Length: 97
Image 1 (cartoon, rainbow, N blue to C red):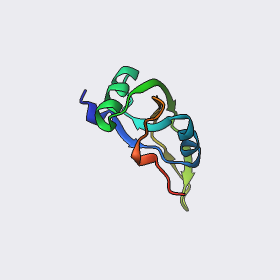
Image 2: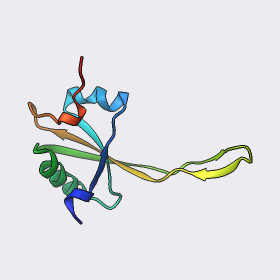
Image 3: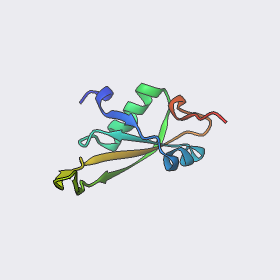
């Protein structure tokens, strides 16, 4: 698996930005990626050293939408919370103010 395809996108929410003070950053990752692969991808893409990686899988939810109340299914998403070394940061998550 190519390391550039492991990390799909950063997860930028109020909660994920709140834990950046503890050097924890959240990413949506490929479902088949392992923790060591995620660690290597973070090092290659952002140039920071990952101390630990925690993963979670968000299950799909079926809801009904529209006038005809047709069912729709949300995708299964795997997230990784990466803790990096003290003093390092990732510029995507830096906020102004």
